View 1 (cartoon, rainbow, N blue to C red):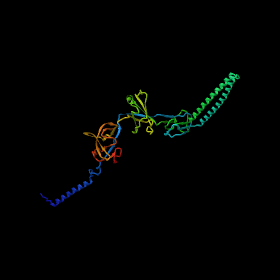
View 2 (cartoon, rainbow, N blue to C red):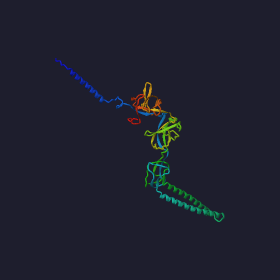
View 3 (cartoon, rainbow, N blue to C red):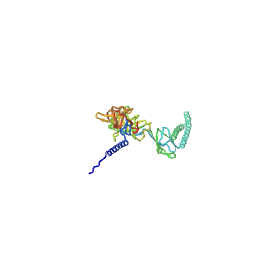
View 4 (cartoon, rainbow, N blue to C red):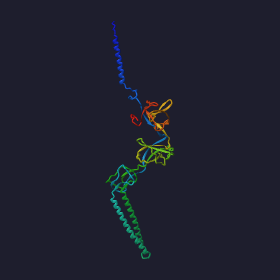
Length: 385
């Protein structure tokens, strides 16, 4: 067996090579590996959290019913005279006011009828004057025994007939005036007008067709029914004890209280329900006739409490707590006393007040006294506040 002797110089050289390789590997590792734990490096530093602002809400018990929106007043415009439509003086779907002229039916014929009625009245009045004079003359002659009784009777009869003819002619004149007025179809109420069912140039007959429809949109009525077993609630249906809110199809809430209400006078025997009608101002035109909404009823003097999202709440052996962020974006731990829930939110009895900011996302990255960057939950979560 041959023993190979390694010189000291070669051993030292190999050792130096090993040391250089280790140093080079360490250098490359420190250069290529991100410094995640160092302040100011990407992903480190001050943590970013999402906060929501606490609000005070009425958490009193409430009832919710499906309701329909209906106009208090609505009118179908129907012609009272016959003729061709000469003018349509409104824009479909627009707001019209009481007294506005909407349609005009040909007027020449009715103006001529009015002139005939005036002439007939003048003729009847002239005949009446002649008959009255003849009757008075015959009555004077009869008193002096110069005229026979039959002559007086004939004169009196002609006088009375002439008087009746004047009354008839006056009535015919009024009817002619009414017919002429009906050639202009005016809005009997203020409201929103729909589609014109008949356009210019078409012939219409009296009471034959609906020209258009007007519905009142302010004020407007909301109608709903409650089970008869809920009648005890109706005992509190008084303006100073009841708060009503409307939830629209898009989820928005109308907090305006009803201006008036009334309860139907009998229970529907088929459905065992009682109808209630609420009236709203609707000056902003948020309610549309024929639509469906939800009526939310609660006590007017309901108690307001702080509500927060359940995601803001943490638990430990000592109970529930939240992290509150102040104006300087410093975190503080806050112990809270909780109650039940309201519309998906947690009711807070003690520990918070309205307007404070609590962390709802990023709780695992903070602790009491930590500095954070906070964004409201309604803002872009990547945008620092």
